[in-house]
Every structure is written in structure tokens, then in C-alpha cells.
Length: 207
Image 1: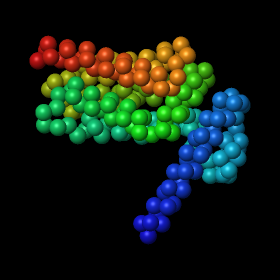
Image 2: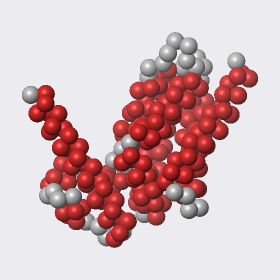
Image 3: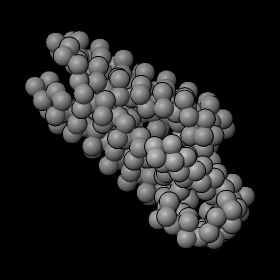
Image 4: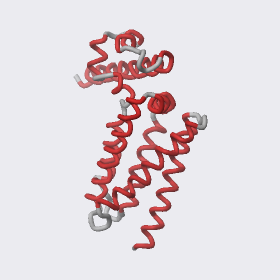
């Protein structure tokens, strides 16, 4: 039975990846607004009904890994080691997010198209900002819960905003200057390391 379930899950994963790939290709070729759900389904060789069993809308395809990413980071923060300080948790959480991107080639290949669409389609830009603020709020609250005596909620919010906001901005600025997806990721990683170093130095002075 477990083998059957395993095969079923793999098939579902392949279908999901096919829908994402088809949607991104059509969005880049025809334009986001001009592409219909039925066209995406046809390109992935599935029915429109099947599309809606995986995604509620075209928008959800663009942000397909957002929830998975923030939940991964929150799990890291929710499981502190005895010697951990807030900066250690934040460093490990962000490192885990970059590690996920590095290991998943599909996510890497989607970085360029997704960021291009987010920058050029107003509705996607609005949702991206909403998701960014919401994910930062969740992470800040989790960091404060993990280290309540070290960081107030305001301080945790400032730390998270510096790291996550800095990484996002660096990636978008690099893309606007013609960077490749790989260069965008590297820009985000460098910005993260810079922000973490500054926070680590400030934390050392206060301790």
C-alpha cells in the first residue's frame, strides 16, 4: 500500500511541476494577463479541473512555494538549541531557506521568470509585498517567542526586516540591472550575510 501511495504522490508532484513550468513559459511568452487557465492546463496536458485541484488561481502558480518556504524557516526558529541566541536562530533560518533553493533546481529555474513577473505585473507586485510583510511578521513573532528575554517584538521585527528586506531588495535591484537568476540569488545571499554580520556585531556590543 505504501508503494502505491508513493507512486501516487510522485505522479501528483510531476503534475504540479508540469503546471508550474507550463504557466511560467506561457506567462513569459504571451504575458500574464493574456494567459488563461485553460491554456496552462492544455500545455501541461491536463484538464482545467485538474489545474484547480492544484491551484486556486494563476496567481497561486506564481507564489507556489511561498508558504512552504516560510514554514521551513519557522520550524528552524521554533526548535532552538540550548546555546542559541536570536542571531544564531535567524542565521540558521535564513541559511536553510537558501539551502532549499540551492538543492531544488526547479525553484532555481523559476527565480528569474517569477521575479520578472512580480516586477512588471501590478497585481502580482501587490501580492508579493503582502506576502513579504506577512512572512516577516510571522518570523519576527517566532523569533521573539524563542528569545523573549533577548529581543522585544519591536527588536525582533527590526532584525528580521533588515535581513529579509535587504535580501529581497538586493535581488530585485540586481535583476533590474540585468543580473541572471544565479546572480540574483548571490546578491540576496551577500545582502543577507552583510545584514547578519551587522546584527551580530550589534549583539556582541550589547552582551
